[in-house]
Amino acid sequence: MDDQLIRTGSGTVPGAFSEQPCWVPAGTASWRIDVGLHFEVVRCAADAGALIAARLGTTCGPVIASPAANFYDFLLDPGTRVDTDIPKAWQLPTRTPIRVPPLTDTSGRFLHWVVPPGGTTTAEALYAAAVAAFRRPERSIRQELGSLWFRLYG
Image (cartoon, rainbow, N blue to C red; front, side, top):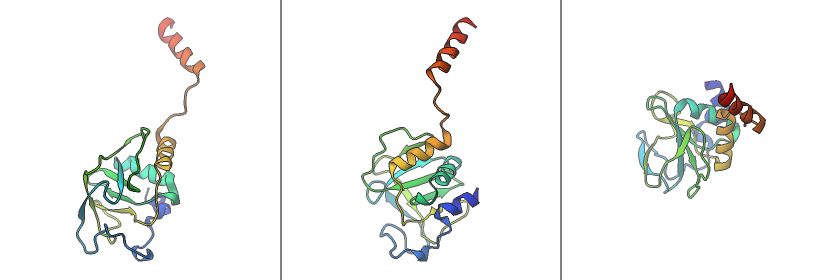
């Protein structure tokens, strides 16, 4: 699984960014930041998040994870609203506090960056990656009718 995540950008060293966003801690402690101020957040379980991040590949924007707490947080641009149901994920409400780790935290069981700041994930790309990872192909009307017939008469 880690091999897949390296391709998403987690192998990027923090010093590679020209500027550190003002909302990323400069020291060694994480900061509590309210959703909606600098970013929006779509959260999912860690296993689902790893699959979605792998599907996004190099187009994946910032992602914070905590395997011990079993979550991945995908950070989206401020004001982004997810209008569709993303499989196995949900958007956190505005003003929900989350913890943001310093850029030096890039691995481990606790809070760390899977993909550090520097890119952007759109709501549409996140939705498409989640659908590709978790949704079964749509069943045809013929399959649905056959299933219904079997339940009624089979």
